[in-house]
Amino acid sequence: MWIVQSRMFRRWGGEIFDASVLHSVRITPSIHKIIVKKPDSFSFLPVQFTFLSLMTSEGIDTRPMSIATSPSRPNLEYAVRLSDSYYKQAFGSLKRGGLVRVQGPFGDFILNEKRPAVLIAGGIGITPLKGMAEYASDRRLNIPVRLLYSNRSEDEIAYRAELQELEVRNLNFKVFNTLTGKEIPNGWRGSKGRIDQDLVRLAVDSLKRPIYYLCGKPSMVSAVFNMLLQMGIPEEDVNYEVFRGYWN
Ligand SMILES: Cc1cc2nc3c(=O)[nH]c(=O)nc-3n(C[C@H](O)[C@H](O)[C@H](O)COP(=O)(O)OP(=O)(O)OC[C@H]3O[C@@H](n4cnc5c(N)ncnc54)[C@H](O)[C@@H]3O)c2cc1C
Picture 1 (cartoon, rainbow, N blue to C red):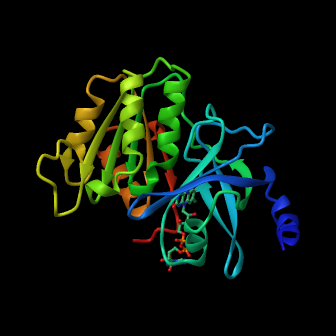
Picture 2: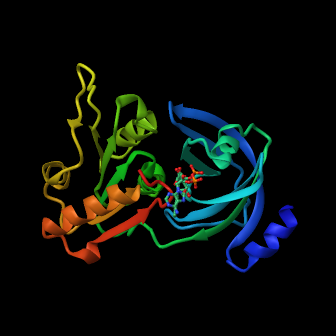
């Protein structure tokens, strides 16, 4: 089955390889991550996506998936918001030693290493932006990087500890969390409500002509994109990756 599929996929280009799962873990109530072995020959830019094929109970299934880490790290990482699709069930059940098929890299959602960066993520849209933040820190890029990260509840903030650790390591990097759900825990020190103009202004502060990188479900990306244009930000300074497949 893998053979038939790989003939079809070869037309799409990119490298194709099978990779073993090194680590598989639930990181929030609804998000699961895997780390897979990166072959020496594989390289990508910060941060592209690949197609990721899994053996599900209904046969092989494939989704485009952002790489959730930096090319400066030794392996590949992916994280998904779980659903009841066969693909997501297979993803959430992957065990160490299991095999996945990777094809890529693809895409032009890539960090500009010379301009300040404002990363704006909704929920699982954090995946490529976390990779960009890691890259800026690992490569000691001399650019300010701000991450605005919106989630429904505190327990759904993915990679919280990793992002905090990056903030400590890289004084050019700052995270601004906001919660959109009704139940905000006592003592919450981040913002409340959706990412709005005030939060963007707070995060951008005195940064000179930053590039904005938006990632999340279609409704979130288009709402933030329109808001940035209303704020007078030139369209060419706004990049985005839309996670099509999340309709609501
Ligand atoms: C470049 C790129 C990178 C991505 N990276 C990630 C990532 O890092 N993590 C991640 O979790 N996801 C990512 N995605 C999205 C991912 O590819 C899947 O689309 C998504 O995870 C949903 O998959 P699923 O198996 O849960 O649902 P699917 O079975 O694919 O269906 C998604 C939902 O949409 C509904 N649906 C399907 N088709 C239609 C339609 N035509 N009209 C209306 N509703 C429909 C389904 O009923 C279901 O509720 C990325 C997408 C792109 C394009």
